Length: 75
Image (cartoon, rainbow, N blue to C red; front, side):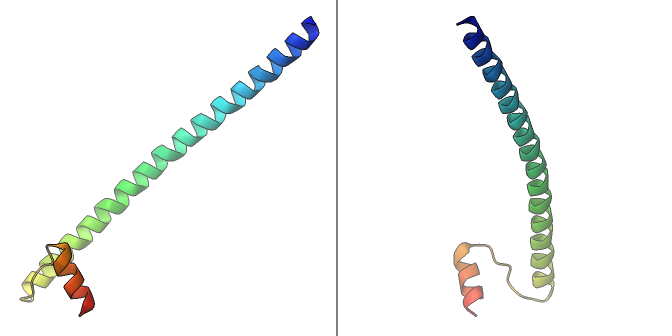
């Protein structure tokens, strides 16, 4: 009986260790993805600011609302 308990305990400890490794790996990947997302957001924001600025310099109107965006898209 002790052998069965010890075997089960060993198996559970191994699974627990594997689970912890998976969680740490996922946390690391999530942090990397958050960093990439931040870069994309900044890049997109800079592109939008640049495009609005260029549009305004050429006498156009900057798109400020969802409705304006939809109208421009339909054109």
